[in-house]
Image (cartoon, rainbow, N blue to C red; front, side):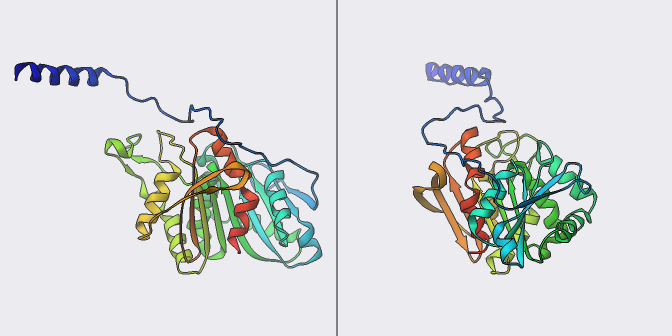
Length: 291
């Protein structure tokens, strides 16, 4: 008995001296199992314009060929990523679209702050785009990674005017207490997820369209897109269906959950290339907002 007790104490002492896992923001992994195919840029097919005086950085937008030839058109405002990529994805849908690209820097707070500070900002941006475009109908929001910050604040203020939302590996929140993950007894800061929950409820009822995609990346210092998606599904009484199939550009889909017009798609991967895969899948994900 004494020997066993000593062994238990020794094990506990060694465990207490062991290093804690290093923060994983960004993921330190390098992954080469999947193809990680990339969309190749081509010359734009539509008319491109710039609005320089609404946000701190210029907003580029394109009137796609389908929009120019067959108005009225729908507006897609995409947050974060090289402008050519959402524009090219919009062209590839063949739908009459005007697509705007908003880039405000690194981090969700950079995208959230201006819209939180000025509730009229998105309305003014939409009006400026409309003044330079063919007649517009529906308005859709698309966000990659930190771009979710802008979408969250717009949904707080103008959710009823938004017809559909696409979040691409980018629905985050903090832990409470700060930095204490779920495995350590922490919990999600739900206050930052409530605008998404409200919109998801509308989508479940068929009133709006909401598509969420996510990887398995675990930032460590704040909640992952897997954790926030799990929370959202739990609040809605939904569960994931295991799936093993190919996604766009070599992505591997692992799960999905659908109800009404609300969809959550989970994909493999915990590395930076896996994160970027999601953005390059935009041409596949975007039509889910109206199909």
